[in-house]
Amino acid sequence: MTWTIISIILISLLKILITCLPTGPVEWLIRKFETHSKLGDKNITLSIDGRRLEGEDKTKVINDFNEAIFLKKHYIFPGTEELYLNPENSDSPIVIETKRGNKEVKLFVYRYKDHVDVVKQFKKKLVAYSLMSESLQKFSM
Image (cartoon, rainbow, N blue to C red; front, side):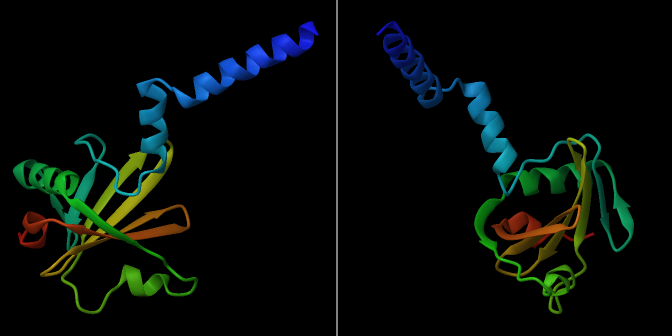
């Protein structure tokens, strides 16, 4: 009888803890699984056509990328990775190299007139998605 009461109390406490998580763990979970994550200024290298961006241009691109609106995620079928990494009708991409935790992440930002495509490459995995950012679409060096 006492084991039943103790187990009911423990299960109830566990249920309350899971359904009412504090803000810190919730934000950590969201950051862990978000597709379009925000970038910081530290440990980031930006380049266009092999030329590195520094100073105001770098800060402007990072801010524009962080403020961009997520449109949709694209599913990449096995064997079609090359089509996403080298699209035919795009300008040269903005290449962003950064580190998230222990993972090296490379972002390829392809600019079009009506949207921006981002291909995120980490390890052997690719994730592609579209953004809306007028300032990134019009950015030129």
